[in-house]
Image (cartoon, rainbow, N blue to C red; front, side, top):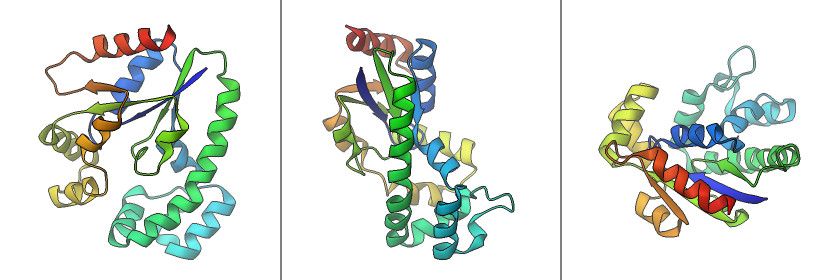
Length: 193
């Protein structure tokens, strides 16, 4: 079974592309979603509260992503702290997930910061989903209700798209003009043969 990473900058349309792969019966592990669930795990919760305080959690111990993001983006060392706790836990879940989905010809591991963390080296190939910056900005503004300043601040934390596409094995253009499904089908065909 091949392990394929899929990434792209904020607002590129990774979720849309992953949904198409799922229609083709390819299992997708959503690393960022998994990370959000892990924030509620007792040991992780304790470490996070000790570092940031309880303001980053709702009373039901669910993380407040916007509050956490604001704290992280103000202090780069805070991001390193969070990554040191969350990434190993996500990898343990991924290894368990692979065992359940090992009959597929390949699986996808979706993560926004695959290259930035060096995790691209764990995969047989990497797909990068791209979209022009103005389109990504519009999508994020509509989806997350963030200000332009907040969006640009978050985007600045990710590698430029060109750096990612230069290291990609496959590129999917989600620019609103190029049809996405044929691109996915072409990659799928290459990965199953």
